[in-house]
Amino acid sequence: MTQTYHATETIDKNGTTITVVIPCYNEVHTLEKVLARVQAVQIADEIVIVDDGSQDGTRDLLHRLEAEQRAGVRILFHEHNQGKGAALVTGFAAAQGDIVLIQDADMEYDPRDYPRLIQPILEGISPVVYGSRFLGGPRKAMNFWNMVANKGLTLATNVLYNAILSDMETCYKVFRREVVQGMKIHARGFEFEPEFTAKVLKQGIRIYEVPISYNGREWTEGKKIKWTDAPIALWTLFKYRFVD
Image (cartoon, rainbow, N blue to C red):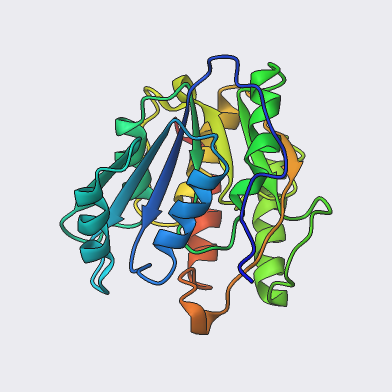
């Protein structure tokens, strides 16, 4: 028997509109499932998918979805692979919602967490909310060295920017659209996470964190971030601490 996927929490948006930005690269096996889950929670007013030059059939899938003219779904294409950061910049420029939420296309993050991610913004607690994998939410155990890298980069963030984050590298970054308007993002790859975080903190914004669930995938399942991304992220944190 097929289990129905639906939101476990509800939220009163009080007229606030939500844009979910989904960057994707070679995610033909998971993208449509992620889109279905985002739509099932019935919170997004707009879904912007940015294909970053996929070569595994994702583009054919997206052209089919485009032909279906699904309400509220916009699909943008990069002709060549530029990196996650570049795809997000394209998505942010296209977003029209009052609040923007980043959603990966690989099934690691669960859209049923959207209400708890959005509520602090609606209540005026903070204009930026991160979903933390390390605040006690249910999760599939990640690789030890991945955890060490995540915690090390988060510690560096806290030391350099006088913060108390628990998960700087999380995908689930949610913010009012004006936070990113006028923000020049140079990152083209996974260094987007530290650059965005650094620039938010340098604005004097205190990021609010909430626990989320996490179902990390294995390297054999297409996980893309590599150990070489860690020193790049660390350098990015140092660079933007001292450079405007």
